[in-house]
Length: 217
Image (cartoon, rainbow, N blue to C red; front, side, top):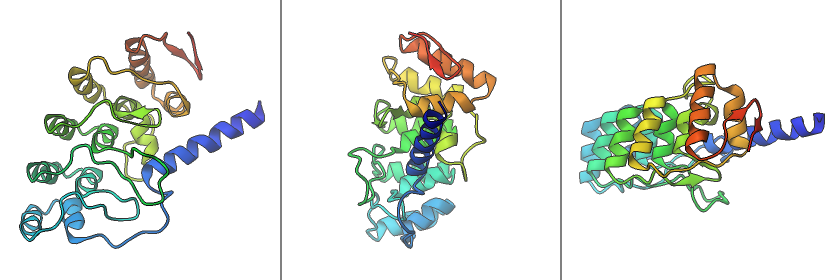
C-alpha cells in the first residue's frame, strides 16, 4: 500500500507540474505582445497587433499564446481585446518538447482560475468546452484541479467554482467527466463544499458519487 501511495503521489505531482508549465525546460524571453497581455496594456496590445504581431504566437517557457498569458494574470480586458482581434479561443500550450497532441486550452485555464467573465467570453468566441488534456477538461479545472495545476499563481488549494461549472454545462449539457489520477487528487484536496460539487459533477456524468479516494460504481 505504501508503494501504491507513493506512486500516486509522484504521478499527481508530475501531472500538476506539466499542466502548470513548470516541466517545460527553461524560460524564454517573452515577446512584446505577450508582455502587454500579461500586464493588461490595451494600448500596447492594439499598437503591436496593428504593427503585425502574430496574435497566436507561442511565447515563454510553456509556449502559451498571448491569450493564455492574459488569462494567467487575470487580465480580462486584455483577453477580450485579443479575442476581438481574432485570437484562437481553442489554442493550447504546445511546447516543442510536449508529447501531447492537445495542450491546455484557454478555457481550461480560465475555468481553473475561476474567471467567470473570461470563461463566458471564451465560450462566446467559440471555445470548445469538450476539449481535454488527458482526462482533464474545463469542468475538472473548475471543480478544483486548476488550483493544483498552478500552485504558485492559482487559487488556494481545495478551491472550486460552481458558477464557472454552470456556465460550461449551460454551453455543453452533455459534457461528461472521466475519473483518473487528476480527479482523485482534486477530490482528496477539495474543501467540503467542493467535494459536494465534485459529487454533483459525477452524478451528472452518470456515475455514482465518489467516497473518499474511491469510486462507487
